[in-house]
Amino acid sequence: MFSRKSIFIAALSFMVFSAPAFLANEALSAGKQYDLAVGSLRGTMGRLGAGLANVINKNNKEFGLSVTPGGGRANPARIGGGGADFGYSFSNFSANALTGKAPYKKSYPNLRGIAKFWDSCYHQYAAKELFDSGITSWRKIIESKKPLKLAPAKKGTSTEYVASQIVKHYGTSYKELTKRGYKLTFPGAGGMSRAIRARQIDFYFHNSGDPNGAGIQAAQGRDLVFLNMDNDVKKLLADMNFKPCAIPGGIYKGNPKPTYSMGLSGVLLTTTKMDAKTVYSLLKIMSSNLKTLGSVHKIYKKWKPSVGAAHMGVPMHPGAKRFYKEAGAL
Image (spheres, rainbow, N blue to C red):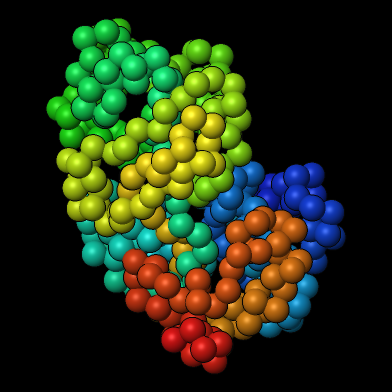
C-alpha cells in the first residue's frame, strides 16, 4: 500500500512535470488538510483536481487540498467510507452508491454533491467496413459469427465496467468472446484511437464530452461510423442511472448527423461530515479563479454556477446550497 505521504508526493510530481507552469509552485495551505480523490493523475479528473488544489491552497489559510489518485467508480464508496474528504465521480455512480445499488455492495447515504462540471456521452466507434458488413449495433457485435477485434476501454475504468455489463446483458463474457476467437484489447482513449487507425481493432467504446481529440484523430485516420446505442442497452443503462444524450453531427469526419447514446455527468462530492463553511469557501475560491483554472482544463472555461447546481445524483451539500443561492443559480 502507498502511504498518504507518498501518494501526495506523486501528485505534486505530476503537477510539476505535466501541468501548466503555475502549478509547479503550489504551496500547501497552513490550515487543515483534506484529501481530494481524482481519477488517474494525467486524466480529466486529475487535471481538474490539480488545478482546484492549487487555487485553494494559494488563496486561503483555513484549509488545503492534497490530490490522491482514485477512480470515478471507486471514489463514491471511498468518500462515503471516510477514505477521502472530497472527490470526483459521475452522477450515476454517485446515485447508485447513495442507495447501495450495483456496483456497490452497501449504501453511502452520507454522500453529498458540491458541483456538476461536465456532461459526457458513450461513443461507439466502428470501422466503416464493419458497419457496411451489417455490424451496426452491440447485439450484432456480440452475435457476429466472424470473430471481431474490439476495445471495450481501459481495464478497471468506469467505461470498461459499463462495457462488461453490456456484454453480460447479451449473455456472454470477455472470456467467452475470446474463446470464440474475438481479439479484445484494453488501452486508454489515445491507445484505442491509434489502434483503430492502425486497423488493430475495428470497434471501440469510449466515454467523453465533445469534441473529443482522440476521436477526431481516429476519424481522420480511418473511415468510421458512430453507432446509435441499442434500445435495450439504453434501458439497461437507464436502470443504472445513466441518462439519454446525443453526440452532435458534424464534429467527427464521416458523421454528419447526431448519434444517440447514453451518458452521465462529472461531479464533485463530499459527505455530510464536511462543514458548510469549507464547502462554501471552496466554491467561492474556485469561482473567483476560473480564468486561472481555465488554463488547466477547458471544462473550467465553461463552468458557471448554473452548471454547478445541476443534478449530481446525490443531495446537495448545505454549503453548496448557500453558494448557489447567493449566485442566483437556485
